Length: 201
Ligand code: ATP
Image (cartoon, rainbow, N blue to C red; front, side, top):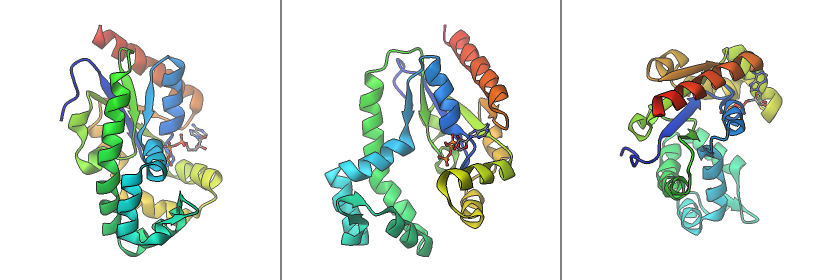
């Protein structure tokens, strides 16, 4: 489904710890509205009664603890049975999709950015007018995520191994940000923003 002509939707994606959120923030500084799809998905999993009911059918009452999503329990279940992730996505993604469309209707900027971990893996390219991929060296990404999430190297590596390689993502993207160094990455973000504004004039 291609977006309505009025709104130009630019996807910003990249592997775990590549710096999607960090680079998106630069675009927010340039007054470009950013929809953080993964963050909204997590919020909707706590807020939406429909999602809640469906997740409880799938996982049992343990899916929520004190009315909050029991992320640790869900992670364990997904680890045991990988097909569960697909089932969660099929419950959550349509809701995020309609939430995004409502948000999009209110936007007036020349383009908007949608930060999302997965685009190519699910063949969702056609939902975007342009796609930016953020990449960084794998060692660097692992260090960042260990520091941010207090998680193990093995856990991060297993996520990386389940994601499409940077090379494949780059080939399918319109723009790439190399985010090993923040200052250099910001200059690349500025250049992409200017290029998009020129193209959309
Ligand atoms: P995820 O997919 O895990 O949500 P992400 O791609 O959105 O991650 P960020 O959350 O932006 O990545 O960055 C991961 C961590 O690395 C954050 O703590 C961020 O502050 C840090 N970080 C991002 N870019 C750099 C950089 N160039 N140099 C040092 N630290 C960085």
